[in-house]
Image (cartoon, rainbow, N blue to C red; front, side):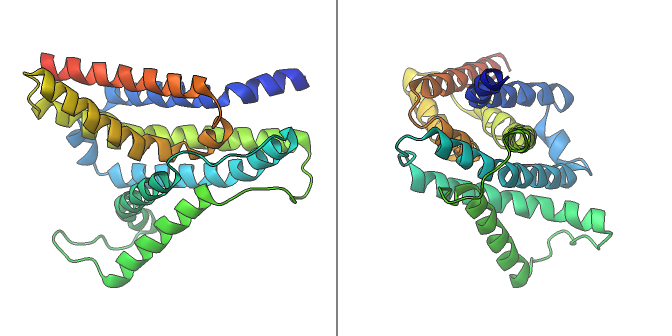
Length: 250
């Protein structure tokens, strides 16, 4: 049983990547156009759900994951591009908190902001603080000196965190990556090799700034894995090819 659990845990980052990629594609069947999704009354509720799922997943996974890595031993190296990942994560969380605000007011039965009405300074400050807290929740250090954890409890808690993270990141990936960036490719000129190269560079930067920060805890797990970078490159190439096909055919 212990061997089976270890095997499952070793494959979790790969399962996370492929599930997020697949679920994002399936959501495209439900909402073929982003404007249909963003214009729906439930959009802000979806964003609030993604925010809560993601934050809950971070809280559940952080402690048991670092506890497991400490027990495994070995030198802990800094994740590459850490500062860029932190800034990218904060920007994503700030956008998400702003988009989820209407959903929170809707569920709480509060009055919605009127169209064109300026947001108060207190609301802006609150959004910034919440987004900073969520970034700290993901990037806060983990280390030794923690209280012992029951192995069954640790495994179940971390697995629950994985499920919540997959759910939350899949929704965010669909909105910010699948539909926003890839939909913009339909309006780009792809009539020369130079334009395609520029598009590749642009999407590569967006991929680093968007997707990698949201899977930071899995980067910590796989920071020494070449297989991880090959898998991420493969998924990126699949997304790029899909976007190019949609841009050419539409």
